[in-house]
Length: 341
Image 1 (spheres, one colour):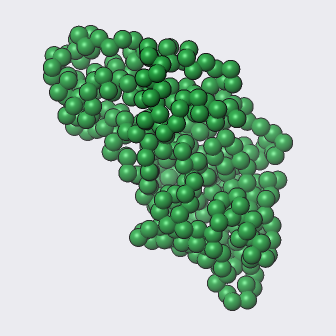
Image 2: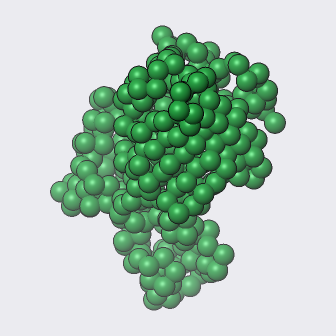
């Protein structure tokens, strides 16, 4: 177990994380609901005891580009009803206490070292926290859905996750370790510090990988299929897909692709249709669009969309822009503006 994870789990219950990033400190229920609601989303907050004896609320938040890491703690038992989150995904890792959570029709009990929760923006949620403190990762909805589109060969659409994160499973341990490391990094930099653009992009990639490849969701099978990881994918098609990805910036050469895979052109065409649900040219276009989205996500302020597009093999900028908008729900320039703003 990493030192960061040990530090996050071994601190006494009275200690808090991200204390230099304090946003809300109050023992007033209405004030807590209003101020925390501004950071996350409006929600109904009620103490389970009529007199609100022992109630307190603490919210510390270190915000980054497209995500934030938070420490949220409530004294006493409280019910929290945010409904649908709408704009973001939340990963909640309990540090102390416990939480009973209902996400849609699924019910789970979150507890330190055992179970965390993953809340999707379109599934209504209700929770009861009992003297609970949690490390919470907020990820922008558009960021997650666009990356899922890039990985799955589908157009960006609503994403919904299995809300249960098993902290004993390898994927759960890896996610928890990364969140612990991110908290420690934020504490070391402090509110006046700032991650470089490269470090920020690297962290986005790490967090997106944990969610989209480590946790179960509606596009999990599509991502496995599109990436060539499906169990029944013939070796020749896996080789062909890898060759296509490695040479995505070059003009499509079906004869060369068939030679690399060891089967005929017609067999390749039929195989792509059957196993990927796409023609070879459609998959190549999707690979180029996915690469363009990633490049724009990491782009410098003076980056040229035209130069990036030509470098990735696009020859018609108008058609590229139309295909990009259809896949990601916005223009390439809109993606670039959001990343550098």
